[in-house]
Length: 138
Image 1 (tube, rainbow, N blue to C red):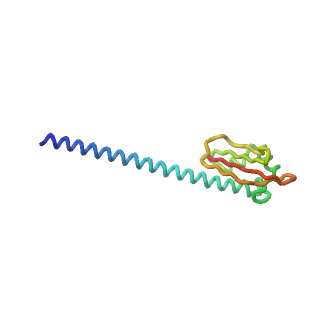
Image 2: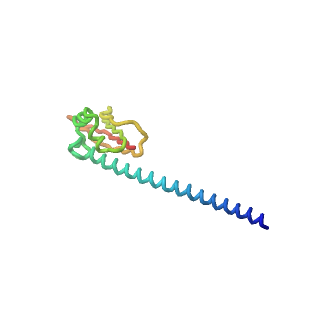
């Protein structure tokens, strides 16, 4: 009887430890997922504010919302996209602006985007041309 009690106690203790390990692993995964979700939401908010800055702020490219000045885009390209880098800090980014035939601006680095936002825009030089803007953040 005494030996059987020891075996039952050891089995119960082993089962308790397995359940405890399972709970710890599950909680760790839950907290990790919550942390990733918060990080992704933060990047999305930064991407939204950067898109508004790029497409609507007259101090950068915008003549009026979603109408971007081609000469200002060229100036930003010449500065190495410094204003875009400041707007997306501290995240890695890649910004591409296309007109109907060419890549007008391609700056930033290559990475695995967490957030990708694309907007239809108008590019204004002497004429108004349809274009597209794509911003990736990670």
